[in-house]
Length: 450
Image (cartoon, rainbow, N blue to C red; front, side):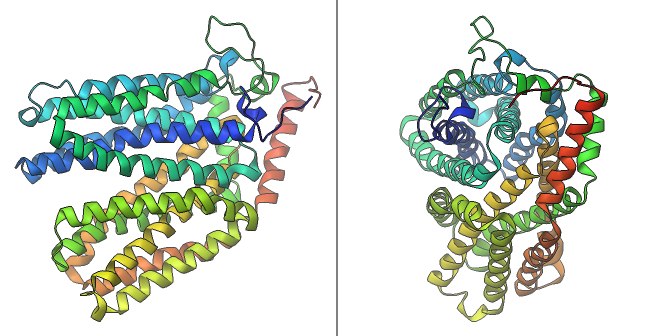
């Protein structure tokens, strides 16, 4: 009897609830260290009179491992313990490293006067965070059906944003009241508890929980696993050069520019132009992101699943263009705190919805054979765009007013809204299916019963 998708199952392919729960938990595990590392710790260092150069260097170092994702992804597509699943062994390894490295940062001696020690451990946390992220995304592409990907991404991104924001608020309180070491140790417990999830749930029925447990590799995993680096590179090239994939590569890069522009714009604009304090912005950022994350969890993914990726992406992008352009043109209202807070709130809700739609679209374009590598390629290009977008803020502001900078930013979602119309999921899927048929004909002559 086929297991119900509305009940928990020990295998992720057997239950939608198991998939939603597992991937949400794994994304919370990413969000907690990120909230501490990227937000709470820089604020803590600034509060203790550390220089802008020291803090900027710390942030720069902990960002480095996220650029390694494109190197790690092919490794995961090439090697695994297949009897435990294609990506699950890597998820467990990444989660274990994340737990140990996050716990260890609380034991850096004299952290306020040991920025080098913080950077080393922070680098390790980012490395395992990026590692777990690649493995989790690869496993999601493998086991989540196409008609659930947007809803799953809504839950994943919503829980990560909530985890990041809550860890920022709670972490800051704990650091100030209990001290740095105790605060990090307490938060590490939450990350450690989540380790139960990838250990308990297998990818497919009959797989081993651990290498020494009973079980065997699933036939679907065997057929999807590539055996050489040349196969991975050849398969990646075959799927990446398809029209819809090339279009999405461009969309990923432009979306990164949009997010990078706004990430750098908003704190600089509110603090330098409007006279806010960094505490004002941080508190508003946390509260709005928690609310936006809840919206994403409840309706962001559902809307994309119900109405379709392209339609909802077009609506989100059109709204983003309109909202940013209106804010840019209404300079007389910039002195109104309610107007500015309303704009920031609407933008971050749209940001979450856009991220959900973009990630779901990328997953739907992935070929399971090289899912981790292909999806990471998309995200690497988005990260490159984000870095460029952040850098553009300084360049644009030197020559233009804030109105012009915001208007330039509004062009990014407009460009994306136009080119996203040329993505055709059916033609892309048909082409990918023809790859699989050809490969089975030439390389794997046996037929697998459904």
